[in-house]
Image 1 (cartoon, rainbow, N blue to C red):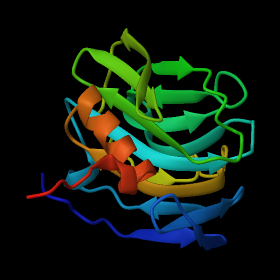
Image 2 (cartoon, rainbow, N blue to C red):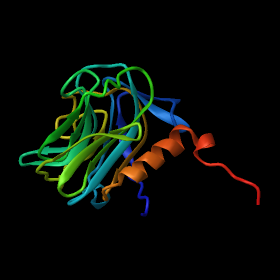
Image 3 (spheres, rainbow, N blue to C red):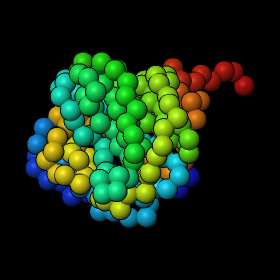
Image 4 (cartoon, rainbow, N blue to C red):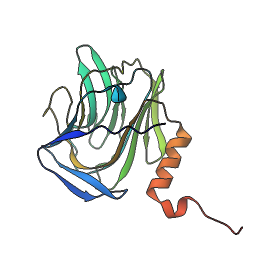
Length: 195
């Protein structure tokens, strides 16, 4: 795949912090990044949304959001929507919920996938839940990090975000496990033997 960079506008105070992979963005619970809608972030059939997340907040937090409400469409990761510390993946029509308990102040790799028929949530490299859910991915809204894209300020993310990625393909369980293992412990991910 080709990586495409989209620039975002910072609103409020977001500071640099140590991340899981080099540096991270530290959101203060009232700040966000707004990325203008473009073809590269508007998906239609498949999507993978992933990020390293570190938070201690328990309330609802719109973390990565491309949400349209009339009609419903888009994708996103919302924390705490169903219960404290939960992970919720939005596929444009339905939320898939997993009570992950990730609001513990540690780094967690959170991934939501829609493959055309089924939604999946992975946490720290492992599949946690899946369900066949109707979806509508093609939102024309902007993409927001740290709040709801169509209702700025509805809820804010309070924590650190690192390596946030959106892909227009449904990543496999093996791909996600390899990403987690490689990023969480690069020194033990592989070994080099004698020639």
